Amino acid sequence: MKRGGSDEQKRAAGESAVDAVSNGMVVGLGTGSTTAYAIRKLGRLIDDGMDIEGIPTSYQSRQLAREVGIPLTSLEDATPDLAIDGADQVADGTLIKGGGAAHTREKLVDAAADRLLVVVDPTKEADALDHPVAVEVLPDARRTVAEAVTDLGGDPQLRAAERKDGPVVTDNGNLVLDCDFGTIEDPAALARELSMVPGVLEHGLFVGLADEIHCGTDDGVRVKEL
Ligand SMILES: O=C(CO)[C@H](O)[C@H](O)COP(=O)(O)O
Image (cartoon, rainbow, N blue to C red; front, side):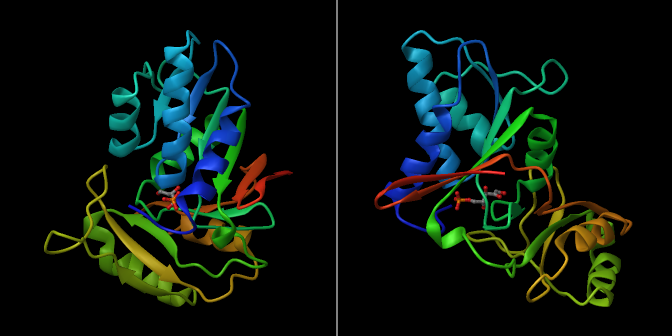
C-alpha cells in the first residue's frame, strides 16, 4: 500500500539502509512501500554474488523477497544482524508502526536484530507522536480491548478492509484497532499500558528499538544515529 512521501524519497531511504549490509548477514525484512526498495536492492546484491539471508515480517515482504531471490530463514534458525523497517511516524527515535498491519511480526524481528535501521520520508518525521496507534487484537477481544483503549484516553476504530467487506484480518488471523490518542506525551508509558491489556497481541509503538533513522529527502538521505 502506498503512503507518505514521494517514491524517490522512499527509494533513497530504503537503498541507503542497505549500504550497512555486508556479506554473510541475516537481515530482517520490514513491510511497506519504503522497505520494498531495500528488499529489491538486497536482491540485486545477491545477484552480484553476496551471501545474505532474510527474515520476512509479513506475507508481503516474504513474497517480494522470493521474487527478487533472497534466501529466507526464520527467527527459529537465525538472529538478524540488522533489520530494515519503515514507520508511519517517528519522533525522538520512537516509532509508530502498523500501517500495513504487520507490526506484530515486525516488532518480533526488529527487537531480535542487533541493529534496527528505520527508513522513512520527511512526511513521517514529527516533533511529537500523534498518529493513531495500530493495536492487533484477538477477534474475541475486540470489544473489551476497545473499552480498555477508551479508558486509556484513546478512540479505537476497527480497521476496515479495502476491496473486501468487513475488517482487515492480519497475517496472524486477528483484527486491528486504530487508536487515536491525540498527542502522545509519554509513549513509553502508553506502550506499557497497552501491552498489559488482555487480548492485545501487539501494538505499533516501538520504543527504544531504533538505532538509525534514514530519511530520504529530495536532496539525499539524512541519517540520524540514536
Ligand atoms: O509499519 C508498517 C507496516 O506494518 C510500515 O513499515 C509502515 O506503515 C510504513 O509503510 P510505508 O513505507 O509504505 O509508508
